Image (tube, rainbow, N blue to C red; front, top):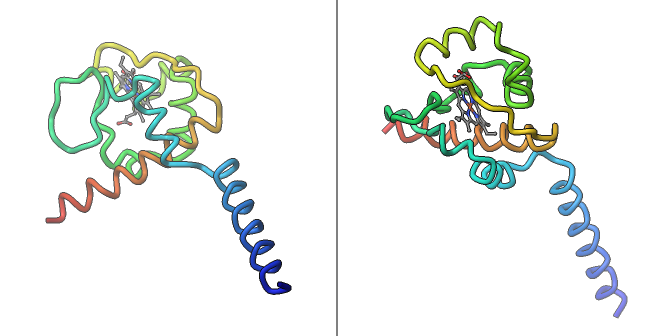
Length: 127
Ligand code: HEC
């Protein structure tokens, strides 16, 4: 009986650590859900194919951009009209990206998702 009790305690500890990590860590799965729910997907592809979507492909964007720049941009695109990189993108994407009113955690989750999506598309390209 004694060892049974320890097992249950261990299971509960493991479970709560897992739940805490889910609650406080950046969560790519939540990011994927937000990417769809917030409409990012309507304007952005994640692959390297050329599309006629209003925004640029986000394939590998977590590699080509600084994390702090990405956070600032996704959180508050209206604050970056004068950013030189955004000005370059505007030349080929004339409709500016709207503010999606995301929390800091939502921004972090989306970036976690963009990171895993980049890794997948890189693997695809390697083949
Ligand atoms: C209505 C279309 C539209 C929506 C919706 C949209 N974007 Fe954008 N996005 C753009 C455009 C256009 C640009 C290029 C910069 C500009 O002109 O505003 C851009 C640029 C970006 C960039 C920078 C790309 C690079 O090459 O550096 C990232 C990252 C990004 N968007 C992420 C998102 C995320 C995350 C969401 C959802 C929360 C989102 N976008 C929603 C149109 C959109």
